[in-house]
Each structure stands twice: as C-alpha cells, then as structure tokens.
Amino acid sequence: MIQRRHFRMFVAALSLALLGVAGMVVAQGTRNNGFDSSGSFEVAGVEVDVRADDAESARQAGWRLATRKGWAQLAQRLAGRKGATLSDSTLDSIVTGIIVEQENVGPNRYVARLGVLFDRNKAGALLGVSTHMTRSPPMLLLPLEWSGGAGRMFERANAWQDAWARFRSGNSAIDYVRPQGTGPDSLLMNAGQTFRRGRGWWREVLDSYGAADVLIAEVELRREYPGGPITGIFTASHGPDRAQLARFALRVNNSDSLDALLDAGVQRIDKVYQDALTSGLLKTDQLLAFRPPQPREEVPVEETPSESLPVEQAPPPAETATTISLQVDTPSSSALLATEGAVRGIPGVRSASTTSLALGGVSVMRVTYDGSIGSLRAQLEGRGWTVQQGPGVLRISKPSTSPRPSPTESTSQE
Image 1 (cartoon, rainbow, N blue to C red):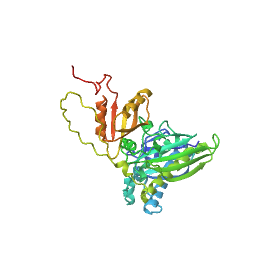
Image 2 (image 1 turned 90 degrees about the vertical axis):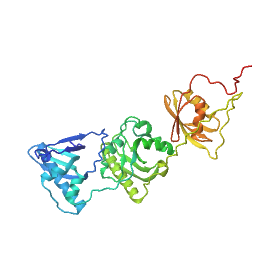
Image 3 (image 1 turned 120 degrees about the horizontal axis):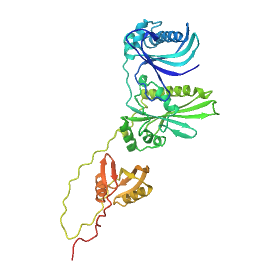
C-alpha cells in the first residue's frame, strides 16, 4: 500500500526503539493548518530498500538507513564532505523528523522514498557552517485556487491550501504570513480581494495580520476528465497591483497525483519569490507603509447669542478633495440607500459610493469630500450621527430617532 504522510518525531534522551529513540511520531493529516516554519535542514528523496524478519523491523531499519544516507547528502551539500558519517546516537540527537514521501510495506521488506529533517543549529555546528538566514519583510500569502471557473481561497478547505500547509517555510528566505483560514479570514481575503488596488483597504488587512506586503500564489486546475490527467497553471504575483513574477504549467497523468503536482508548484513558486527578493524585484509597496497624519484637534468656538439662529454654511472648498472611507451599519438595502442619500446631502461631499456591501453587517463607502476628515466628522455629528474616527476612516452608527429642530425655524415668540 502506497501512502504519503508527514511524520514528526519528538526525540527522548535514551536510545531504545525506532531510530534508536524512545519517541513519538505524529502524522499530520491533509487538512492540517499547523504550518511548519521551524527551519530544519531537509534532505528529500532518500531511497531505501530493506529486508527484515517482519514488517515493523524492516520499517525501523529503513528509517535508520535513511538518516545515515540523509546525513551524508547534507554534509556533501553544505560542507562538501563526501561519505560523512556519524554515530547512530548522534544522529538520534539531531534528527527532528521523518517524511514518508512514498512507501511499500511487505511482510519482511520495506521499500520507500523518505525525507529526513535535521535540527538546523545542531547540524550547522557539527558541519561548521553558518545557520544565519536573511529573510524578507513579513509577506501575507494568499493561496488562490481556480477550479471549475470558481476562485476559492479560505471559504472552505481545498487542495492548494493544504499544499501550502505542508510546505516547510523555515528554509525559505521569504517570511510568509499564512492565515489559518478561520474566523474573519474568508471574509477579508477572497478571490475578489486580490483584484482590489485601493491601498487604504489593503493597509487595514495587512495591519490585521502584521504583514508589510502581499503575495498572491494562484493555480488554475484543468481536468481532462474525472480521474484523468490534470494540468495546473501556476502564477506568482506580488502586491495589490498583482505584479506578475512568473507563470508556468505542470501536468500529472491522474488525479491521484494531485498532491504531488501542487507540492511541486509550491516549491517552484517559493523559488520564484526568493529569486525576486535576491534580484530586487520583490520590493515592499511604499504606499502600503504610508500612514496619513493624524488630524489636529479642533478648538471649540463659543457661539454669540443672537436673535436668530445662524444659517449653516458649507465649509470652504479645498484645493484638492479628500477621499475618506466611511464604515456604516447596513441591516438592509433600504438602510444603505438612506445612508448614501444622507451622506450625499452634506455640503462639500462630491460623491459617495459603496465599495464593499455587507447587508446585515458593516459596509464601506468611499466619500470624496472638499475639506478635512475632521470637518466631515463635525457635519455628521451635527446631523445626529455617532462618529468614531481613525486614520482616513470614519465609523458611523445609526442616528438618533428623535427629530432635530430645523435651522430655519424661529425660536423667538411674538
């Protein structure tokens, strides 16, 4: 039986059993979002073919042989040492995991292709090599899968998201920020979000995840027929403008090899991002790091009593209009229309349009206003709205239902 599993081994102090270690091996399922970013050195594709008295003994001997072969390959790769060996007890202290890429288990024979993970600091010290790695600023990763004409990201679990969960990012120069896909992830990040270029909204999303920029890793899956060949069209993009860094295609002969196809795509996309970082193409968008200056507090002006109330005047026109994001509760479509009409009726407002609709939740309006954000806030409060102010954003709640006196009504009595 051929199986593909990812195993992690917690090494104990004494050398007793499997790989000479009284440890535990934990299998990670395909729906696991526990991303591995430990940075262990990985040696993949170690072939073993071992015979023993029974299947379990053959497996143990195969894993033992894999650690020896893996160390020899790692020493050759990092330090140029051919045929390097270590004692089994030393190997037990630096091996952090075994990855089963493919295996055949018989009554007394074990044939497999394995991967071995070595502790970075301990292995580096034994080989005399530096383990320091220069990494990029935190990059928010959005894995977007197109299948059947529909784009999916975190709305529900999918094979592309699982492939990135299996990817060990600790050996990459890219500091990936990978959302778990729970909570508000599916609302904040979806296929539509990747086509938005507004830096203000992107800045809010990136700040929520502690990232400096965004990476969009796409795959379009084309199936010739159910269970048959699958072609994956992979695209690596960067930034709110979706600047394309690379585009390539991979193909497998049947649907059982879908995970292998996507794993190869992840590895290649990661290499594209690392090469772009080295060449200087992967730069952080300066507009995403820009923070608008905080408005100065306005000094309240005392009104002078007069016989009649002053006529409300529009604020003086500004040289350039200000674009402000307005967040408002929209329990229904009628409430949304009423809010848009009320905002458009404020003097100085050039336009007010809904850019993000969420009936029953909080919608976002883009308002173009001839004046400062503090001036717009004052006008909204003067019309009975409760207003909270943030950088370039106003959050308003439903105005009071009690009617306010009209400015044109007279307060004097004859």
